[in-house]
Amino acid sequence: MAPPLDDGTGTFQPSDIEVTTIDVGNTAGNVIPGKATAAFNIRFNDRWSEESLKKEIQGRLECAAADPGLRPGREAAPARFDLEWRTRPSPVFLTRNDRLIGTLSASIEAVTGRKPGLSTSGGTSDARFIKDYCPVVEFGLVGKTMHMVDERVSLADLETLTRVYERFIADWFGHAAL
Image (tube, rainbow, N blue to C red; front, side, top):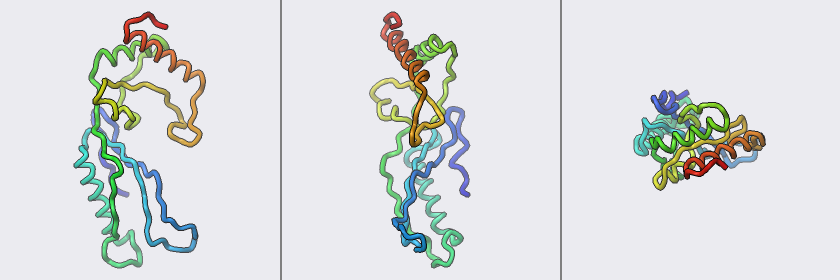
């Protein structure tokens, strides 16, 4: 087992690699495949840049390809592989807009009666695509079925979330709560 990418930082969780698919293109159960493809999603923290992350992954794959224990009965040459980056790794970001964070936190507390904890847990999100155009802070539903087949949430949680969003919009734009 390879060592973890890192142990996290003071602000972000440890980076990890999520294998999303492995395919050998072979429907027969008794044939050793000639090749395999795999896809993975890397959730990384602020210890990594695009360049350093790509270099680390390339190095780990080269090390695995050269390990004879991973190719029993095969030639001594390293296994061949191609690494294709389908998307550019997005830089890690952290919002430091006190007004935005404070307004959302106050809205959450007003609706739920609970003071929210600020956290970067949960990995990456689509906020990375808009962070360069407007301030970003995230708040939403969580659950045991997130990003799974049959993902679902309770209607009560959705209604509470809606009230928090309504309160935030009213407070952000200086109007009485809806």
